[in-house]
Image (cartoon, rainbow, N blue to C red; front, side):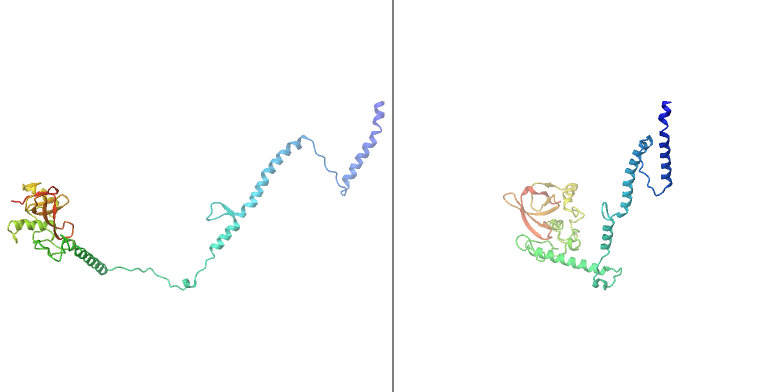
Length: 286
């Protein structure tokens, strides 16, 4: 047939090709031909997956290998190379100590205690210095209406002018006010005007106002003794800033001459003239 005649010459060539393939496999020294790129469906299906896996694995390997070469610095805010950290530690331990420091003796837990005698002596010296400073201040006021407290001023008849005032540890006068205070001086003048210059006293702390001059106006009102804005000789000039004085005389223009102690906290006698309206006048009690 026509078909048989065409196929007959092809069979010997196929057999030869098969025989040549067999020889090639049996000969290990013969290099195998390079495989052809497969166009099968399985190769196309696994190619992208392998590429994606490679993209994930390779950076991870690089990061894992590089990580031990870095360390967190103890004093830094981030990461630095481990070599820099080692250098920092090395420099921190590189301390030079002077030979003089090495030979210095060790100190123990010792402390000094101030004794009571030392404290008392320091207080005594401070008090003496304070009194000396105050005496110098008073001495600087020797002129004018102020007097040095060691010299009795002209016109001052207060019998205890030399006594130590309360500021420096002084005590109470026979009128039971502190020496050389404004209230003690005025109480003395009220007694003098009443004709009493020694014990028993007519006016003292118990019968007049208390030790504070501020309370004298209330004492006058409580006892029913007269007060007025018009000054009279022998009255008490009362000031609301906690001070009293003695009205010595009244001038033609209505101003008032007063005598007082301790007006400026110097415990000394002095005189001054004030406007009539600058004080309340407590009339001498009956």
